[in-house]
Length: 183
Image (tube, rainbow, N blue to C red; front, side):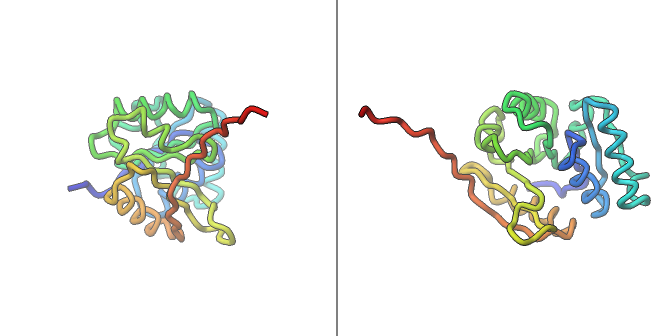
């Protein structure tokens, strides 16, 4: 039986990270934000305070990824779109997160299945993308891989519901490179 999501860790304080952190705070989740850049963290705090001053006071900052993920029930990776960095994050999540934690990625360029493949829990890996649903700015796309469990999807749908987001569930389609035929 999966535990209820109470704590959300957001790794990366750029645009997606700060939006996820703000939405999680507004939904009442304990929210931990981590970024390697102090200035990006400061900018995120200021942005969140500008959106909702009441929730910004509840934001918890972490100095390391390991510290951010230890108590989290849902970990949202929102780092730069660099394959190696995202894979490193999922490796750290796998090593330091709680056994029931869900690993989510905002990635638009790295397949979620590729990130899940470096973990011992691909069934608990999913994509979460803000504003991806055409025509709906306040929407969230959940991207399932062939290994993503129904329980993981249900837990993430509940988070989205509490955040007030319209949810679209999509299956990840991994496009394999074309093999050129001889002329």
